[in-house]
Length: 215
Image 1: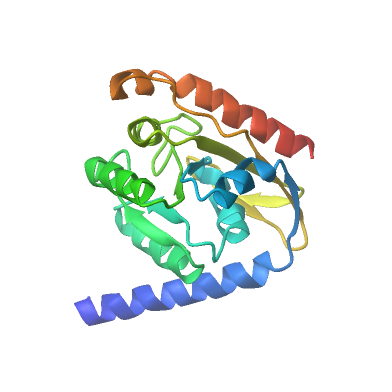
Image 2: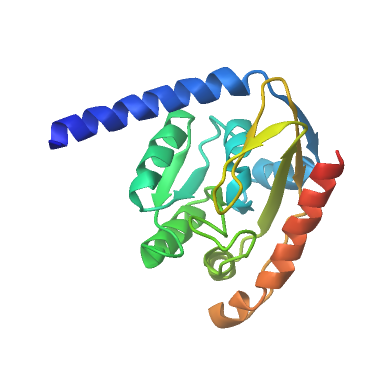
């Protein structure tokens, strides 16, 4: 396959994907809990990190479309599709992940935060293990002294892909519950000690997800 054909195919997939997401997402009904947890930071122009599990990405990308958040997307080939669709939805992208391009991703996150931006991270992506908090977001938050806002989503009816993360696609006209955890700082004097707080943030996301599933 030539480069031109490959590029055309990628563009077609991205355009179809963006269209399909919009057509589906406009039917969703959102119920939001604890939105003020990040709205207050935004009102003060304080940078922070959104953290959510990879499998809940789709309804959260739609929820925050057009806000200019910088989202970390894998450097793997399939990440290119996600990155382009995210850009169609009004996100900026940082390329890299815990398994490939980790140093570049960390530098990108730190740079965005230092410039006053908001960053979104899936700390268990792109390959898992599911719902295990990798250290990148913790190290970035510790270096720049910004809080992490955990967020979770659950749908009243959804398709689940047979993937490592059980990727969730809310069905048409389903209710999507989104719960934001309180902004939480990484209280550690060094990057090494920041990494040790993974279980704390896993618990925060677990509590938010439980609340979202209760509705």
